[in-house]
Amino acid sequence: MFDLDKFISMLYNRQLPPEDSIKEICDKAKELLCREGNIQYIQAPVTVVGDVHGQFFDVLEIFKIGGYCPDTNYVFLGNLYKCDYVDRGYYSVETIALLTCLKLRYPNRIQLIRGNHESRSITQTYGFYTECFRKYGNSNVWKYFTDMFDFLGLGVIINNSIFCVHGGLSPSIHTIDQIKMIDRFKEIPHEGPMTDLVWSDPLPNSSSFSSDLDRSDFLISPRGAGYVFGREITRKFLEINGLGHICRAHQLCMEGYQILYDDMLSTVWSAPNYCYRCGNKASILEIGPNLERFFNVFSECPDNEREKPNTEFDNRDSRRIDDLLQDATENIMHKEMNDIEDIGDNSEILNKEKEIPEYFL
Image (cartoon, rainbow, N blue to C red; front, side):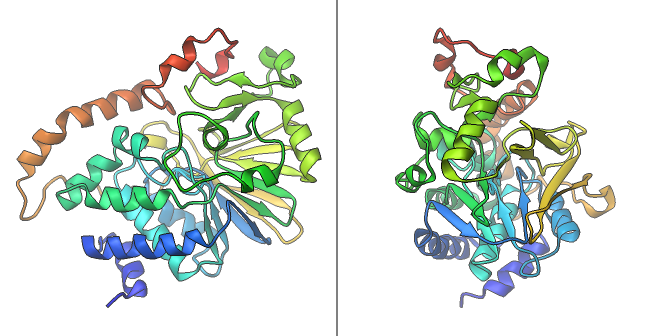
């Protein structure tokens, strides 16, 4: 029997549903998400959450601070929502399973937006595949979730005024209607408008980039996918679409958030002490009925409320699994240490003779 409330209760207590239940959860989520458009229109009040990256106990901290569903409306910006929901934390499976169950239980109270980590290639590189294999002994659960990622929406508009997206803007997209026309039911491509929405970044408000902020063209991103853009592009996009603000995630903010371009754009980051070593604060963006915005800043979950991962596996040959995944795990750790938000093997884009701001190097 499919008991959604039971699964939610289990997951709040970090108990994973069995594999066949995960399959059913993902199948039902695909049916629900398929009925939603690329852009969802919702009304405030609502709380916007940035990248959480599988830091499960910090997600529970978010609910303690911001309120539990359905008492609080949420938009997760992939790396669900916009947030990255998965990769890099110890409990990515628990995190994405809980958010998916909450979406099924309260479909109008929680919105899940696709992030750049909600893809097969990225999750194979940065830990989600490995975690699924470790916890279930095979890759089936990874396949169920990554198939579901293809159904996630690309953006949310709050009160016809605030555009929420994981990454940023695209030279191929001038209007919201163009986003609505994208075929999103697929793996994130190597390039194109869908890729740009989950990978692009704004330039910082800095004297070092003052000459670039008012450029009317995009710059190639050193991430290897997407673009970087400035104040003038942001202003024009808002003006054309009759919007007042862009809210996005995707970039680590040491203070938990960043406001750019005379309050036209903001970044919200919701993974405190990112990768358990960066020492950053995090925030959630609380948007009131009259679109007043408040960044509720918080620190990581207290140590006495956080469990360390258990590397032993009941009824499995854990040594065999470790041997199979040793190379992948070492690769993950090296990449995490070298780059907060890189994407792996797309470095050929960087060889193009384009100007690349030092901020992203």
